[in-house]
Image (cartoon, rainbow, N blue to C red; front, side, top):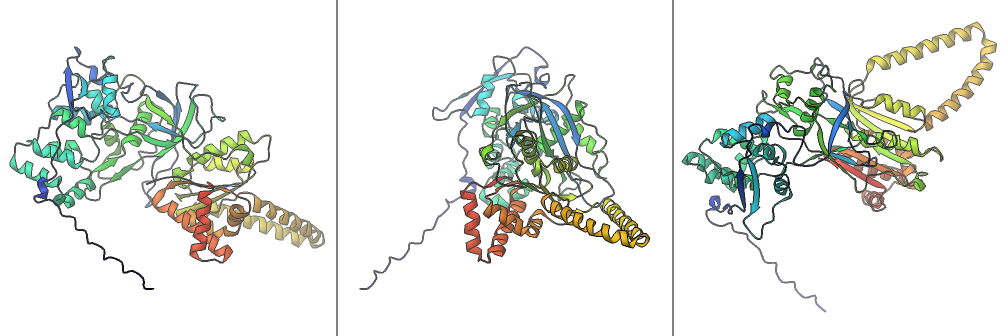
Amino acid sequence: MTEPVAAPKKKIVLKRAAGSSSSNELPPCKIKVEFIDNGTSNCGTSSSTSSLCVNQLATIESAKYMTILDQESTIEIKRVIEMTLNLGNTELSYQPGDYISVFAPNTHNHVISLIKRLSLDENKLIKIESIDKTFELPNHLKKVNENFNNNTSTIYNVLRDLVDITGIPSKKLLKLLSEHSSDSNDKLELNKLSSIEGKEEYSQMISNRVTLLCLLDKYKSSNPPFNHLLELINPLAPRDYSISSSPLSMEKGILSFVFSVVDFKLSSTPSQRILGHCTSWLEKTGINNNKLQQQQQQQQQPSTTNLEDSLKNLNIESPNEIRIPFILKPSPHFHLPPVDQLNRPIIMIGPGTGVAPFIGFLQHLSKTTSSIPNPTTWLFFGCRSEKRDFLYKDTLESMLKDNTLTKLITAFSRELDIENNNNNNNNNNNNNNNNNNNNNNNNNNNNNNNNNNNNNNNNNNNNNNNNATIEPTCGYVQEKMIEHSKQLFDMVTNQNAFIYICGDAKGMAVGVRNSFIDIVKQELNCDEKQATDIFTNWIKEKRYILDVWS
Protein backbone atom coordinates (compact mmCIF):
# COMPACT_ATOMS: atom_id res chain seq x y z
CA MET A 1 0.00 0.00 0.00
CA THR A 2 1.50 3.27 -1.08
CA GLU A 3 1.72 6.23 1.31
CA PRO A 4 -0.52 9.18 0.38
CA VAL A 5 1.40 12.08 -1.06
CA ALA A 6 1.39 15.07 1.26
CA ALA A 7 -0.08 18.23 -0.14
CA PRO A 8 2.59 20.84 -0.95
CA LYS A 9 2.97 23.49 1.74
CA LYS A 10 1.64 26.88 0.83
CA LYS A 11 4.15 29.67 0.86
CA ILE A 12 2.80 32.52 2.95
CA VAL A 13 4.05 35.94 2.04
CA LEU A 14 3.36 38.80 4.43
CA LYS A 15 3.08 42.08 2.58
CA ARG A 16 3.54 45.37 4.29
CA ALA A 17 1.05 48.04 3.47
CA ALA A 18 2.14 50.63 0.96
CA GLY A 19 3.55 53.80 2.39
CA SER A 20 4.86 51.98 5.45
CA SER A 21 6.49 55.08 6.88
CA SER A 22 3.03 56.49 7.45
CA SER A 23 1.29 53.19 8.32
CA ASN A 24 2.24 53.51 12.00
CA GLU A 25 -0.66 55.83 12.64
CA LEU A 26 -1.00 57.07 16.17
CA PRO A 27 -4.34 56.23 17.79
CA PRO A 28 -6.23 59.11 19.41
CA CYS A 29 -5.54 59.94 23.03
CA LYS A 30 -7.67 57.95 25.48
CA ILE A 31 -7.32 60.11 28.58
CA LYS A 32 -8.33 63.58 29.68
CA VAL A 33 -6.23 65.61 32.14
CA GLU A 34 -7.90 68.25 34.27
CA PHE A 35 -5.65 70.98 35.73
CA ILE A 36 -6.63 72.45 39.10
CA ASP A 37 -5.03 75.45 40.77
CA ASN A 38 -3.48 74.32 44.03
CA GLY A 39 -3.23 77.75 45.58
CA THR A 40 0.39 77.27 46.71
CA SER A 41 3.69 78.18 45.12
CA ASN A 42 6.01 75.42 46.28
CA CYS A 43 3.95 72.26 46.63
CA GLY A 44 5.78 70.56 43.83
CA THR A 45 9.21 70.61 45.42
CA SER A 46 8.39 70.24 49.11
CA SER A 47 7.42 66.57 49.25
CA SER A 48 10.78 64.83 48.85
CA THR A 49 10.02 62.67 51.90
CA SER A 50 6.91 61.12 50.32
CA SER A 51 6.03 59.24 47.16
CA LEU A 52 2.93 58.87 45.02
CA CYS A 53 3.91 55.25 44.33
CA VAL A 54 3.66 53.70 47.78
CA ASN A 55 2.97 54.68 51.37
CA GLN A 56 5.77 52.58 52.88
CA LEU A 57 8.91 54.63 53.48
CA ALA A 58 12.13 53.31 55.04
CA THR A 59 14.98 55.18 56.66
CA ILE A 60 18.64 54.31 56.17
CA GLU A 61 20.14 52.82 59.34
CA SER A 62 23.61 52.43 57.84
CA ALA A 63 25.42 52.11 54.52
CA LYS A 64 28.96 51.21 53.53
CA TYR A 65 31.05 50.59 50.45
CA MET A 66 32.09 46.95 50.16
CA THR A 67 34.69 47.36 47.43
CA ILE A 68 38.06 49.10 47.36
CA LEU A 69 38.62 51.43 44.42
CA ASP A 70 42.09 52.19 43.10
CA GLN A 71 42.50 54.88 40.45
CA GLU A 72 45.91 53.53 39.45
CA SER A 73 44.69 49.99 38.81
CA THR A 74 43.90 48.85 35.27
CA ILE A 75 41.17 46.56 36.65
CA GLU A 76 37.82 48.30 36.83
CA ILE A 77 35.97 47.58 40.06
CA LYS A 78 32.35 48.60 40.55
CA ARG A 79 31.14 50.45 43.61
CA VAL A 80 29.15 47.97 45.69
CA ILE A 81 27.13 49.23 48.65
CA GLU A 82 25.50 47.37 51.52
CA MET A 83 22.53 49.32 52.87
CA THR A 84 20.58 48.55 56.03
CA LEU A 85 17.05 49.94 56.25
CA ASN A 86 14.61 50.52 59.06
CA LEU A 87 11.26 49.73 57.48
CA GLY A 88 9.33 51.64 60.13
CA ASN A 89 6.95 48.73 60.59
CA THR A 90 7.78 45.73 62.76
CA GLU A 91 4.80 43.80 61.38
CA LEU A 92 6.36 43.44 57.93
CA SER A 93 7.88 40.01 57.37
CA TYR A 94 10.18 38.40 54.83
CA GLN A 95 12.24 35.27 54.23
CA PRO A 96 15.82 34.98 52.99
CA GLY A 97 15.54 34.95 49.20
CA ASP A 98 12.81 37.61 49.07
CA TYR A 99 13.29 41.05 47.49
CA ILE A 100 12.92 44.66 48.44
CA SER A 101 11.45 46.73 45.60
CA VAL A 102 12.71 50.31 45.67
CA PHE A 103 10.77 53.12 43.98
CA ALA A 104 13.43 55.68 43.12
CA PRO A 105 12.11 59.05 41.85
CA ASN A 106 13.27 60.87 38.75
CA THR A 107 15.86 63.55 39.45
CA HIS A 108 14.68 67.03 40.40
CA ASN A 109 16.72 68.73 37.65
CA HIS A 110 15.31 66.46 34.95
CA VAL A 111 11.72 66.95 36.14
CA ILE A 112 12.03 70.74 36.32
CA SER A 113 13.68 70.91 32.88
CA LEU A 114 10.89 68.86 31.32
CA ILE A 115 8.20 70.97 32.99
CA LYS A 116 9.77 74.18 31.68
CA ARG A 117 10.11 72.74 28.17
CA LEU A 118 6.43 71.79 28.16
CA SER A 119 5.45 75.23 29.58
CA LEU A 120 3.63 73.68 32.55
CA ASP A 121 3.08 74.85 36.11
CA GLU A 122 4.74 72.36 38.43
CA ASN A 123 2.33 73.16 41.30
CA LYS A 124 -0.89 72.51 39.39
CA LEU A 125 -2.89 69.57 40.67
CA ILE A 126 -4.19 67.16 38.04
CA LYS A 127 -6.96 64.61 37.74
CA ILE A 128 -7.13 62.00 34.99
CA GLU A 129 -10.12 60.25 33.47
CA SER A 130 -10.57 57.84 30.59
CA ILE A 131 -12.51 59.20 27.62
CA ASP A 132 -12.65 55.78 25.97
CA LYS A 133 -15.11 53.33 27.53
CA THR A 134 -12.91 50.39 26.44
CA PHE A 135 -9.80 51.85 28.06
CA GLU A 136 -9.10 51.42 31.77
CA LEU A 137 -6.55 53.71 33.34
CA PRO A 138 -3.30 51.86 34.06
CA ASN A 139 -2.36 51.50 37.74
CA HIS A 140 0.28 54.22 37.75
CA LEU A 141 -2.23 56.78 36.40
CA LYS A 142 -4.87 55.64 38.89
CA LYS A 143 -2.46 56.74 41.61
CA VAL A 144 -2.80 60.31 40.35
CA ASN A 145 -6.46 60.33 41.30
CA GLU A 146 -5.84 58.40 44.52
CA ASN A 147 -3.51 61.17 45.71
CA PHE A 148 -5.67 64.06 44.54
CA ASN A 149 -7.56 64.63 47.78
CA ASN A 150 -4.36 65.03 49.83
CA ASN A 151 -3.11 67.71 47.39
CA THR A 152 -0.03 65.75 46.30
CA SER A 153 -0.96 64.90 42.70
CA THR A 154 0.88 67.91 41.30
CA ILE A 155 2.46 67.91 37.86
CA TYR A 156 5.86 67.89 39.54
CA ASN A 157 5.12 64.87 41.74
CA VAL A 158 3.49 62.94 38.90
CA LEU A 159 6.53 63.41 36.65
CA ARG A 160 8.89 62.69 39.53
CA ASP A 161 7.30 59.49 40.85
CA LEU A 162 5.05 57.84 38.29
CA VAL A 163 6.40 58.00 34.72
CA ASP A 164 9.75 56.97 33.25
CA ILE A 165 10.82 60.26 31.68
CA THR A 166 14.43 59.08 31.26
CA GLY A 167 13.58 55.73 29.69
CA ILE A 168 13.84 54.75 26.03
CA PRO A 169 11.20 56.70 24.06
CA SER A 170 8.80 54.34 22.32
CA LYS A 171 8.02 54.63 18.63
CA LYS A 172 4.52 55.77 19.52
CA LEU A 173 6.02 58.58 21.54
CA LEU A 174 8.24 59.54 18.59
CA LYS A 175 5.18 59.55 16.37
CA LEU A 176 3.43 61.87 18.81
CA LEU A 177 6.37 64.29 18.73
CA SER A 178 6.32 64.15 14.94
CA GLU A 179 2.62 64.91 14.65
CA HIS A 180 2.98 67.92 16.92
CA SER A 181 6.03 69.43 15.22
CA SER A 182 5.52 72.64 13.28
CA ASP A 183 8.87 72.46 11.47
CA SER A 184 8.80 70.19 8.40
CA ASN A 185 12.33 68.85 8.96
CA ASP A 186 11.59 68.01 12.58
CA LYS A 187 8.41 66.27 11.49
CA LEU A 188 10.20 64.19 8.83
CA GLU A 189 13.08 63.13 11.08
CA LEU A 190 10.83 62.14 13.96
CA ASN A 191 8.46 60.32 11.64
CA LYS A 192 11.33 58.31 10.18
CA LEU A 193 12.57 57.42 13.67
CA SER A 194 9.12 56.05 14.47
CA SER A 195 8.93 53.94 11.28
CA ILE A 196 10.41 50.65 10.11
CA GLU A 197 12.64 52.52 7.68
CA GLY A 198 14.29 54.31 10.59
CA LYS A 199 15.21 51.18 12.57
CA GLU A 200 18.97 51.83 12.29
CA GLU A 201 18.60 55.42 13.47
CA TYR A 202 16.29 54.24 16.27
CA SER A 203 18.84 51.62 17.33
CA GLN A 204 21.54 54.29 17.42
CA MET A 205 19.26 56.53 19.46
CA ILE A 206 18.85 53.76 22.04
CA SER A 207 22.63 53.19 22.17
CA ASN A 208 23.17 56.90 22.81
CA ARG A 209 20.67 56.84 25.69
CA VAL A 210 18.52 59.58 24.17
CA THR A 211 15.67 60.61 26.47
CA LEU A 212 12.40 62.44 25.91
CA LEU A 213 13.99 65.67 27.11
CA CYS A 214 16.90 65.21 24.67
CA LEU A 215 14.41 64.89 21.82
CA LEU A 216 12.42 67.92 22.91
CA ASP A 217 15.63 69.96 23.15
CA LYS A 218 16.69 68.86 19.68
CA TYR A 219 13.31 69.18 17.95
CA LYS A 220 12.26 72.53 19.34
CA SER A 221 9.16 72.88 17.18
CA SER A 222 7.57 69.81 18.79
CA ASN A 223 4.95 70.65 21.41
CA PRO A 224 3.07 67.47 22.33
CA PRO A 225 -0.06 67.71 24.49
CA PHE A 226 0.50 66.72 28.11
CA ASN A 227 -2.40 64.26 28.27
CA HIS A 228 -1.11 62.24 25.33
CA LEU A 229 2.42 62.27 26.75
CA LEU A 230 1.19 60.89 30.07
CA GLU A 231 -0.63 58.10 28.25
CA LEU A 232 2.38 57.06 26.15
CA ILE A 233 5.28 57.39 28.61
CA ASN A 234 5.95 54.08 30.35
CA PRO A 235 5.36 53.81 34.10
CA LEU A 236 8.40 54.25 36.32
CA ALA A 237 9.19 50.71 37.46
CA PRO A 238 10.66 49.80 40.85
CA ARG A 239 14.00 48.02 41.04
CA ASP A 240 14.20 44.71 42.91
CA TYR A 241 17.13 43.80 45.15
CA SER A 242 17.72 40.49 46.92
CA ILE A 243 17.57 40.84 50.69
CA SER A 244 20.93 39.86 52.19
CA SER A 245 19.82 39.32 55.78
CA SER A 246 17.71 36.92 57.79
CA PRO A 247 14.89 38.22 59.99
CA LEU A 248 16.26 35.91 62.70
CA SER A 249 19.58 37.78 62.74
CA MET A 250 18.14 41.33 62.64
CA GLU A 251 15.83 43.35 64.84
CA LYS A 252 12.22 43.43 63.73
CA GLY A 253 11.64 45.82 60.85
CA ILE A 254 15.33 45.90 59.87
CA LEU A 255 16.86 44.38 56.74
CA SER A 256 19.94 44.69 54.54
CA PHE A 257 20.49 44.51 50.80
CA VAL A 258 23.43 44.93 48.45
CA PHE A 259 23.66 46.65 45.09
CA SER A 260 26.27 47.52 42.51
CA VAL A 261 26.15 51.16 41.41
CA VAL A 262 25.53 51.41 37.66
CA ASP A 263 28.04 53.95 36.39
CA PHE A 264 29.68 53.88 32.97
CA LYS A 265 30.77 56.05 30.05
CA LEU A 266 29.17 55.82 26.63
CA SER A 267 31.51 54.41 24.01
CA SER A 268 30.09 56.86 21.46
CA THR A 269 30.49 59.84 23.81
CA PRO A 270 33.18 59.07 26.41
CA SER A 271 32.64 62.39 28.15
CA GLN A 272 29.03 61.41 28.92
CA ARG A 273 28.52 59.45 32.11
CA ILE A 274 25.49 57.20 32.55
CA LEU A 275 24.33 56.66 36.13
CA GLY A 276 21.83 53.96 37.03
CA HIS A 277 18.43 55.39 37.86
CA CYS A 278 17.94 53.67 41.22
CA THR A 279 21.45 52.72 42.32
CA SER A 280 22.83 56.24 41.89
CA TRP A 281 19.84 57.68 43.76
CA LEU A 282 20.38 55.24 46.63
CA GLU A 283 24.08 56.11 46.75
CA LYS A 284 23.41 59.86 46.76
CA THR A 285 20.66 59.46 49.36
CA GLY A 286 23.06 57.59 51.63
CA ILE A 287 25.63 60.37 51.25
CA ASN A 288 23.04 63.13 51.69
CA ASN A 289 21.68 61.49 54.86
CA ASN A 290 25.23 61.25 56.27
CA LYS A 291 25.03 57.45 56.34
CA LEU A 292 27.58 56.81 53.61
CA GLN A 293 31.06 58.28 53.50
CA GLN A 294 32.25 59.56 50.12
CA GLN A 295 35.91 58.73 50.62
CA GLN A 296 36.07 55.53 48.60
CA GLN A 297 33.99 56.55 45.65
CA GLN A 298 36.01 59.74 45.21
CA GLN A 299 39.11 57.68 44.45
CA GLN A 300 37.90 56.66 41.01
CA GLN A 301 37.39 59.94 39.16
CA PRO A 302 37.83 59.72 35.39
CA SER A 303 39.57 62.70 33.85
CA THR A 304 36.66 63.44 31.53
CA THR A 305 33.96 63.80 34.15
CA ASN A 306 33.74 64.49 37.86
CA LEU A 307 31.58 61.89 39.56
CA GLU A 308 30.66 64.22 42.38
CA ASP A 309 29.24 66.68 39.85
CA SER A 310 27.23 63.84 38.31
CA LEU A 311 25.80 62.90 41.68
CA LYS A 312 25.04 66.53 42.46
CA ASN A 313 22.88 66.56 39.34
CA LEU A 314 20.57 64.22 41.21
CA ASN A 315 19.93 67.33 43.29
CA ILE A 316 18.55 65.73 46.42
CA GLU A 317 18.02 68.89 48.43
CA SER A 318 15.84 68.54 51.51
CA PRO A 319 16.09 69.76 55.09
CA ASN A 320 14.56 66.45 56.16
CA GLU A 321 16.02 62.98 56.05
CA ILE A 322 15.22 61.43 52.69
CA ARG A 323 13.31 58.18 52.97
CA ILE A 324 13.21 55.19 50.66
CA PRO A 325 9.84 54.23 49.08
CA PHE A 326 9.60 50.44 49.03
CA ILE A 327 7.54 47.28 49.13
CA LEU A 328 8.63 43.80 50.15
CA LYS A 329 8.29 41.31 47.32
CA PRO A 330 8.15 37.59 48.14
CA SER A 331 10.14 35.26 45.92
CA PRO A 332 7.89 32.58 44.39
CA HIS A 333 10.53 29.86 44.72
CA PHE A 334 13.98 31.03 45.92
CA HIS A 335 13.84 29.98 49.57
CA LEU A 336 15.68 27.55 51.83
CA PRO A 337 14.38 23.97 51.89
CA PRO A 338 11.92 23.06 54.66
CA VAL A 339 13.53 22.19 58.00
CA ASP A 340 12.76 18.49 57.55
CA GLN A 341 14.87 18.49 54.35
CA LEU A 342 17.95 20.19 55.76
CA ASN A 343 19.67 16.81 55.97
CA ARG A 344 20.33 17.27 52.24
CA PRO A 345 23.33 19.32 51.02
CA ILE A 346 22.83 22.90 49.84
CA ILE A 347 25.02 24.11 46.96
CA MET A 348 25.00 27.88 46.40
CA ILE A 349 26.55 29.62 43.39
CA GLY A 350 26.56 33.43 43.52
CA PRO A 351 29.34 35.57 42.03
CA GLY A 352 29.43 39.29 42.77
CA THR A 353 26.23 40.68 44.28
CA GLY A 354 24.65 37.30 43.50
CA VAL A 355 26.00 36.22 46.89
CA ALA A 356 23.47 38.48 48.67
CA PRO A 357 20.60 36.01 49.24
CA PHE A 358 23.08 33.33 50.34
CA ILE A 359 24.30 35.54 53.18
CA GLY A 360 20.68 35.61 54.32
CA PHE A 361 20.41 31.82 53.84
CA LEU A 362 23.48 31.18 55.99
CA GLN A 363 22.42 33.65 58.68
CA HIS A 364 19.07 31.88 58.83
CA LEU A 365 20.64 28.44 59.03
CA SER A 366 22.89 29.55 61.89
CA LYS A 367 19.75 30.40 63.88
CA THR A 368 17.50 27.48 62.88
CA THR A 369 19.87 24.51 63.12
CA SER A 370 20.69 24.74 66.82
CA SER A 371 18.57 21.65 67.55
CA ILE A 372 19.63 19.66 64.47
CA PRO A 373 22.98 18.96 62.79
CA ASN A 374 24.24 21.66 60.44
CA PRO A 375 23.48 20.81 56.80
CA THR A 376 26.33 20.50 54.33
CA THR A 377 26.62 23.94 52.69
CA TRP A 378 28.88 24.76 49.76
CA LEU A 379 29.26 28.26 48.35
CA PHE A 380 30.91 29.13 45.04
CA PHE A 381 31.76 32.84 44.99
CA GLY A 382 33.54 34.79 42.27
CA CYS A 383 34.64 38.37 41.67
CA ARG A 384 37.33 40.29 39.81
CA SER A 385 39.84 40.94 42.56
CA GLU A 386 40.53 38.97 45.72
CA LYS A 387 41.72 42.11 47.47
CA ARG A 388 39.27 44.73 46.21
CA ASP A 389 35.80 43.22 45.67
CA PHE A 390 35.65 40.01 47.69
CA LEU A 391 32.21 40.77 49.16
CA TYR A 392 31.47 39.57 52.71
CA LYS A 393 34.94 38.03 53.04
CA ASP A 394 35.11 38.44 56.83
CA THR A 395 31.51 37.26 57.25
CA LEU A 396 32.12 34.13 55.19
CA GLU A 397 35.35 33.31 57.01
CA SER A 398 33.48 33.61 60.31
CA MET A 399 30.78 31.28 59.02
CA LEU A 400 33.47 28.76 58.11
CA LYS A 401 34.79 28.80 61.64
CA ASP A 402 31.41 28.16 63.25
CA ASN A 403 30.54 25.50 60.62
CA THR A 404 27.52 27.37 59.29
CA LEU A 405 29.35 27.19 55.95
CA THR A 406 30.99 23.86 55.15
CA LYS A 407 33.03 24.79 52.08
CA LEU A 408 33.83 28.02 50.27
CA ILE A 409 35.22 27.89 46.74
CA THR A 410 36.39 31.22 45.32
CA ALA A 411 37.29 32.35 41.81
CA PHE A 412 38.98 35.66 41.02
CA SER A 413 38.81 36.52 37.34
CA ARG A 414 41.36 39.35 37.19
CA GLU A 415 43.56 39.73 40.24
CA LEU A 416 44.84 37.74 43.21
CA ASP A 417 45.87 39.21 46.53
CA ILE A 418 49.50 38.36 45.81
CA GLU A 419 50.79 40.16 48.91
CA ASN A 420 48.70 38.06 51.31
CA ASN A 421 49.43 34.85 49.44
CA ASN A 422 53.16 35.59 49.51
CA ASN A 423 52.97 36.20 53.25
CA ASN A 424 51.27 32.85 53.68
CA ASN A 425 53.97 31.19 51.59
CA ASN A 426 56.71 32.91 53.62
CA ASN A 427 55.12 31.71 56.83
CA ASN A 428 55.03 28.18 55.47
CA ASN A 429 58.68 28.42 54.45
CA ASN A 430 59.63 29.69 57.92
CA ASN A 431 57.75 26.81 59.49
CA ASN A 432 59.56 24.37 57.22
CA ASN A 433 62.93 25.88 58.16
CA ASN A 434 62.11 25.63 61.83
CA ASN A 435 61.09 22.02 61.38
CA ASN A 436 64.37 21.28 59.58
CA ASN A 437 66.36 22.86 62.42
CA ASN A 438 64.48 20.81 64.93
CA ASN A 439 65.15 17.67 62.92
CA ASN A 440 68.88 18.41 62.89
CA ASN A 441 68.96 19.00 66.64
CA ASN A 442 67.29 15.79 67.65
CA ASN A 443 66.81 13.16 64.98
CA ASN A 444 65.72 10.36 67.28
CA ASN A 445 63.03 12.37 69.06
CA ASN A 446 61.88 13.97 65.85
CA ASN A 447 61.45 10.63 64.14
CA ASN A 448 58.88 9.75 66.76
CA ASN A 449 57.38 13.22 66.62
CA ASN A 450 57.26 13.14 62.85
CA ASN A 451 55.27 9.93 62.95
CA ASN A 452 52.83 11.59 65.33
CA ASN A 453 52.79 14.73 63.23
CA ASN A 454 52.13 12.71 60.10
CA ASN A 455 49.15 11.11 61.79
CA ASN A 456 47.96 14.55 62.91
CA ASN A 457 48.53 15.93 59.43
CA ASN A 458 46.50 13.10 57.94
CA ASN A 459 43.70 13.88 60.37
CA ASN A 460 43.96 17.57 59.52
CA ASN A 461 43.89 16.79 55.82
CA ASN A 462 40.76 14.74 56.31
CA ASN A 463 39.20 17.62 58.22
CA ASN A 464 40.26 20.08 55.51
CA ASN A 465 38.49 17.97 52.92
CA ASN A 466 35.30 18.51 54.86
CA ASN A 467 35.89 22.15 55.77
CA ALA A 468 35.99 25.18 53.52
CA THR A 469 39.16 26.51 52.01
CA ILE A 470 39.58 29.75 50.13
CA GLU A 471 41.37 28.86 46.93
CA PRO A 472 43.40 31.83 45.62
CA THR A 473 43.28 31.10 41.90
CA CYS A 474 42.15 33.07 38.88
CA GLY A 475 39.14 31.92 36.91
CA TYR A 476 35.36 31.76 37.02
CA VAL A 477 32.97 29.82 39.24
CA GLN A 478 31.94 27.50 36.39
CA GLU A 479 35.57 26.49 35.97
CA LYS A 480 36.01 25.88 39.69
CA MET A 481 32.99 23.56 39.62
CA ILE A 482 34.80 21.20 37.23
CA GLU A 483 37.69 20.98 39.71
CA HIS A 484 35.21 19.59 42.28
CA SER A 485 33.40 17.35 39.84
CA LYS A 486 33.28 14.15 41.89
CA GLN A 487 32.10 15.78 45.12
CA LEU A 488 29.41 17.84 43.35
CA PHE A 489 28.18 14.82 41.43
CA ASP A 490 27.98 12.76 44.61
CA MET A 491 26.05 15.45 46.49
CA VAL A 492 23.58 16.05 43.68
CA THR A 493 22.94 12.47 42.54
CA ASN A 494 23.47 10.42 45.70
CA GLN A 495 22.50 12.90 48.41
CA ASN A 496 19.74 14.80 46.52
CA ALA A 497 21.38 18.19 47.06
CA PHE A 498 19.57 21.46 46.40
CA ILE A 499 21.34 23.79 43.96
CA TYR A 500 20.77 27.57 44.08
CA ILE A 501 22.15 29.95 41.43
CA CYS A 502 21.94 33.75 41.72
CA GLY A 503 23.41 36.36 39.38
CA ASP A 504 23.92 37.07 35.70
CA ALA A 505 21.57 35.12 33.41
CA LYS A 506 23.46 35.35 30.13
CA GLY A 507 27.03 34.56 31.13
CA MET A 508 27.30 32.97 34.55
CA ALA A 509 24.04 31.00 34.65
CA VAL A 510 24.62 29.51 31.20
CA GLY A 511 28.21 28.63 32.14
CA VAL A 512 27.09 26.96 35.38
CA ARG A 513 24.47 24.94 33.50
CA ASN A 514 27.07 23.76 30.98
CA SER A 515 29.49 22.86 33.78
CA PHE A 516 26.90 20.68 35.51
CA ILE A 517 26.16 18.89 32.23
CA ASP A 518 29.90 18.39 31.68
CA ILE A 519 30.22 16.99 35.22
CA VAL A 520 27.46 14.45 34.55
CA LYS A 521 29.08 13.46 31.24
CA GLN A 522 32.44 13.07 32.92
CA GLU A 523 31.28 11.08 35.95
CA LEU A 524 28.84 8.80 34.12
CA ASN A 525 30.81 8.63 30.87
CA CYS A 526 27.61 9.37 28.97
CA ASP A 527 26.73 11.50 25.95
CA GLU A 528 25.41 15.08 25.83
CA LYS A 529 21.74 14.09 25.52
CA GLN A 530 21.81 11.73 28.47
CA ALA A 531 23.59 14.29 30.62
CA THR A 532 21.15 17.02 29.59
CA ASP A 533 18.18 14.77 30.43
CA ILE A 534 19.59 14.14 33.91
CA PHE A 535 20.19 17.87 34.40
CA THR A 536 16.64 18.66 33.22
CA ASN A 537 15.32 16.20 35.77
CA TRP A 538 16.92 18.22 38.58
CA ILE A 539 14.88 21.22 37.42
CA LYS A 540 11.68 19.16 37.32
CA GLU A 541 12.39 17.95 40.85
CA LYS A 542 12.73 21.61 41.92
CA ARG A 543 16.28 21.01 43.12
CA TYR A 544 17.94 23.35 40.61
CA ILE A 545 16.66 26.82 41.54
CA LEU A 546 17.47 30.05 39.73
CA ASP A 547 17.30 33.74 40.63
CA VAL A 548 18.99 35.43 37.69
CA TRP A 549 18.82 38.73 35.84
CA SER A 550 19.95 40.10 32.47
